[in-house]
Image 1 (cartoon, rainbow, N blue to C red):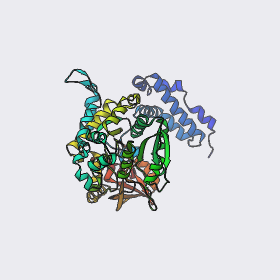
Image 2: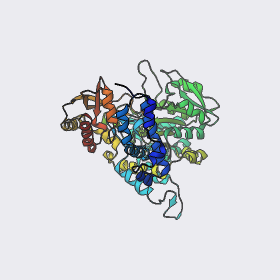
Image 3: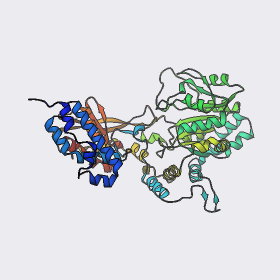
Image 4: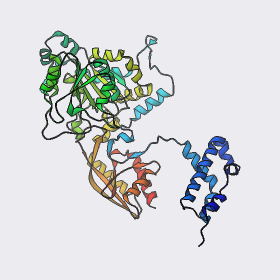
Length: 502
């Protein structure tokens, strides 16, 4: 059979002007405007020319493509004008998936954002006094309630029983009334746009031009090629590394302290773990040294848990309360990790130190907007009310393996096509988001294989679904973990699977 030369096929294509005069394009021009419609026409024609060049079109298929040009332009325009940022279904089992937006917000947070965004608000207005107010007042009151038992370690006998220093031991270590007064003064909190910004602001305020002592084993990369030493450098502080990657002793910190030392810093290893021949000082040891040398002890905690995660099967993850009860002067943590709120960097600690950060001009550059405050306020209210299941992140961590298994069985029963083979297997979910790197949660997963499709092809078709479904691939099968799928999304997952293989 004689093939038509590409040059002849090119001549069969209409010009941009000819296609713009097509009756099928007229309504698109009326809806989207001439410039957008013309741009879509050029894109569609360019795509067809590329397919001709690649040998993908011959005479008959080209005629079919030309006859469908108005519909192709319509699709191009709808895709171009659709949102790029889209909701999707996370079936990976990674609860805090950084690439998928980390913590989903609660219904209360979404409603509060909607109400705050749709109208004016008292963001920086004191309704009682009728004068200018402070935007952080909306969450400061809630943080004070949640962290109230950290402000006065004088009654902290329970803290001592848990292996943390009591108020008396802190006072003895610091040797004075000044430390006692600051310890009793309560906990203050400010909010910036993420945890890297929190560390940047804190170190710039407390250590600009001076040295910050940190263990080599804690100089982590937090993702996206952002490294703690780089953040410290931008703050104007000078990094002073001590110890080795796997072993750092309290003596290493003590020997490094000099006239230029401004802060002792501990960085939580949020996304990796060092095991084997290791050593690092306890918080109590670092605190005693900081008090002896009259230096603030700061902790970059990262994950920001406000509840005890051991009841959810996650051990070894330090919480904000643990650090503050232990006497740490400044704690920096994230809003959209284990706290389960919006992206934010939160700094809690001694009021005098937090006050200095609030007065730093950098704080204004890093502050958050009304929508972040709305989401954070609603999230914190759930904690104050002890309604932890209202926070999706906490609820997902609390779901039992048995409950997930029952949902998986029900969803498998809705898959009707014989072309899709489904097994339900034991699996593991993970917290993700740079939190609890060694912790896993037992789960049940749907393991899928489709006739005529590789695992990569099936996963690609799931991503192309509406809404997109993101899954894992393991040993040639696509795995769906319903721990991170909202129950009301189960039907959409089943419908997409049936549509893909039919």
